[in-house]
Image (cartoon, rainbow, N blue to C red; front, side, top):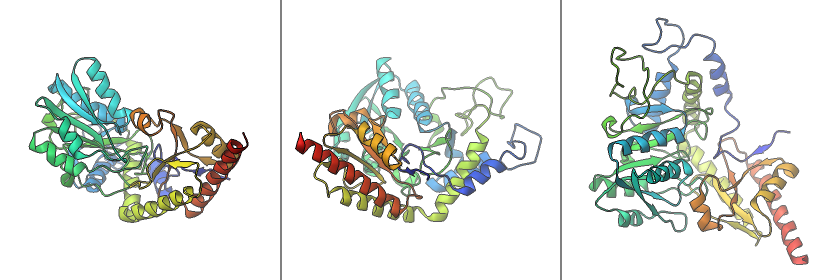
Length: 383
């Protein structure tokens, strides 16, 4: 029997058959890419993926840059911004993932930036809290669109309004929202928006990218061949070549383009409504046990973190996997500041759904978790 896979916030599984088919098809003919071959065979999957991503996020294709993943994108943006603004202050949040925190903290250790952390309450970072942290030398704010631990979506539009009145550069990490909720980067008003291909966009590992409003706002931190302006010994300044060096992950981008097409065929609004209903069902079932603590009970993307009294999160995850064949994720989820607040740094069990998660799988998972909780309560009562 295949496992019940509930770790889609890490990497989605299964992938649509159409994505697997395109992966195979992309290897049948030579790689086609402008400026890199005289051949005309094949499909320009890089351009196709760029057009699909631009359509998904309501922007122009030339403002989409591809990378290895969201972490790679955040490093490019954060390091590139600080190359041009060394010594400024930056703000991030206690809800953020290490893909945001570590580049910022490493730059702080190197003396490139001074960092302020916005706290959260009831799963949310108030725009007012961010506003209160802004000083005269604050030039950068980086924050997650949705928490990968709590599933809470932040009011990035309100934050954007505050920041742009002050001329502060705003990076939004959309690793957990792209494919789950509708994203319009123009409506958000951010300067950069980061996405990854292997989560809710249903592509494969090693793909991702970012939207960037203004190429001049970020200095390149990697240099190399682009297939354009090859007589020049300096990196082109045009998008996307300014940030894309070397041969692209063409097969991965073929899968990303098809993954986006599949998501669009289902409809993001429909995906969101289904995930909301399933999340509400799971949380309502968990309320049946007094010893299950759900850390955020109104997730806007399908991520649910919980603990069972008397059991470590690792023990719960082990039992779910070995006894019930249910795959979750346990621990700190690369977001240590969240866990310092919600569970004292102990870590949690995380369930995360995809558009392929069935109602029956949700029922089976809920039954299993309640059984584990009941057994844990019995042991505590008899001790």
